Image (cartoon, rainbow, N blue to C red; front, top):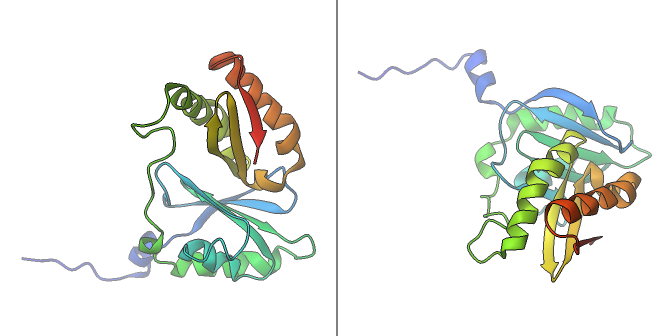
Length: 195
């Protein structure tokens, strides 16, 4: 015998993607929206404009909201950055409505993160491990992230994501702190440069 659960508002609500908390970030033009469901398992997605987001239905839909200039998402949060002259009241309600109607199966499949594949160098694997344990959680807390773009010798190229992407402290103090951490925990010759 098959039982079909009636579609009540509470069942629909459990299946919907929605915001459970909102946090300010160090970037005055970005807000971190914490969600009830996990979007990604190990990667993050950062979009600096709507053209970059064209193949990602979640990000593309958010860019359709008036005043949005960047979208970053990972795990269980989305960081939205707005134009300085746009009021949050024009973004928040349409954003909540969009999320409640969004079909999560449309989120593009994740690729294996750099540093975890079989061809990665031992040093890159160590760097990735240190960043994943000690840096990225702190950046996530502030609504941002960090992407490793490559390792050339001892020079690591990184790209800030989300709220960190346009935050002045990210390009100065945080970059220096990341380099110091990697020099201490991985190799004293490492140099970290932004993309």
